Image (cartoon, rainbow, N blue to C red):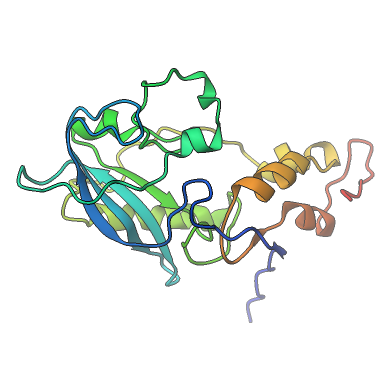
Length: 237
C-alpha cells in the first residue's frame, strides 16, 4: 500500500476585503473598454480591449481558479459596459510606482505582469490568474511547488481550448521572470538558517489574501530543518 504524502503545515492568511487594495467581490462579467479609455487617469488605450472578469478555470483535482482575461474584441459592434472597476495593482501595491513615470502604463497592468494596452492591440490575450487559494480561487495557497506547476499546466491547456485562442501547441514559449533550483535550500533555509522573516512579516501578512490559508515555510523548516555549514541546526523561532 502506497504511503500517503505528508501534509504541509497551514497558517491562516487575511481574507480579501472589498475596497481594500482594489479588491472587488467575485462577479463574472464581460465588458469592452473603448479606444481612448483612461479610467485611471493614466495612459489612454490605443484600441478597444474586451475584459472578461472572474473566468473560471478548472483544475485536475476539481478546484476552480479564477482569472481576468484581456483580449481583442471579436467585432466592432460590442458596446462599452459599465465603468471598469478592476484592480490597478501596480500603484496599489507600490505607491511610488517603482519609478515608472505617470502616464507610461494604462493602469490595467498587474504586479509583475504585462500591460494589456501594449499587447492586446498586437493580437495577444493577457490572462491574470488568481493562483490556488488566493482571492476567490479555491484550495489552499501553496508556495512554488509541484501543485503550482500542475495548476499552470492545467490553466494553459484550458485556455488553449477557448474559441479565441489559436495556440498549437498549447505552450509555445515561456519568458521566466525569476527562478531557482531549490527554493527551500537556496532561499528560505540557506546554510541551515531560516531566512523567511521578510516573506512572513511583509508578504504573507500584508500582501497575500485568501480564504483557506497557506503553506508555512517557517513551520516546515521547524519540522524539517537543514544542517548549518558546521553541521548543526538553528530553530527559526
